[in-house]
Length: 250
Ligand code: G
Ligand code: G
Ligand code: MN
Ligand code: NA
Image (cartoon, rainbow, N blue to C red; front, side):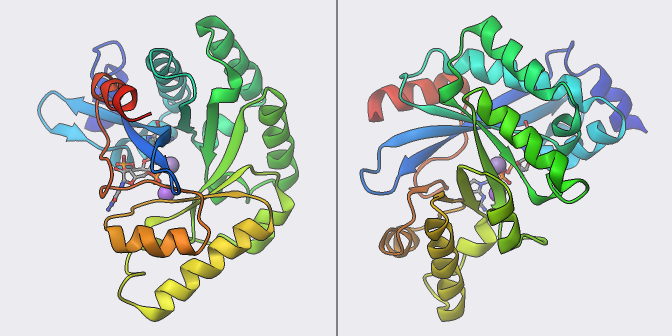
């Protein structure tokens, strides 16, 4: 496949890039974190998003290399930002299943000198279904390094309450489909509020994704959500731009 062949050269060709979207404390509205989002600048097709090329990388065995590259790059970039700002990095189930994932992660952190307590790994339910016991052991080994673990895209797919009890997550990220429409639709709002309540009942930090309006932020705040992320407050930006943004806002 053409894209898979092109992707093979993308790392060495300097064609991958990481952009960063700020995450805000919902009370102070100061940025407390940043999510790293990978991009591929294809020589002829232009900018390609992770939804299109991560599945190819997973299938063709390139995800380990790309995942490690993103992790290194993001930690290096974040070294220049205010120390209280946390970094969230998405990890593919394929990386997560590698028995050496925690060792690799530890050595990346050590080689860069990035503090484990500033890092958060984002994973989805797809990481958990195949072998829940093993998944819990990996989550524990990541947390043993001092790195936080969050369940991303909650409210899509098969995400269930069971997962929240069974695995030791630090944080729950509400998928934007759970947030979109809360200002206009009564039942969407109730579902979102109930999910925030559920997260809080389990002592999880709750972050809402895809917040596009002030009205949505107001509802989320009243419902007890802890943090928010979305176009209403900041879009994904380059490492340099986010560095300036954080220095100004923190
Ligand atoms: O940035 P964007 O909205 O296009 O991201 C789409 C999806 O790609 C999101 O679900 C996000 O979690 C995922 N994604 C972004 N960056 C990475 C990455 O570095 N690794 C993995 N595995 N997924 C990523
Ligand atoms: O990992 P995850 O699927 O949560 O990745 C977040 C994705 O959501 C990123 O690709 C980012 O570009 C996108 N995103 C961030 N904020 C908003 C928003 O306010 N609205 C929409 N539609 N997408 C957003
Ligand atoms: Mn994410
Ligand atoms: Na999400």
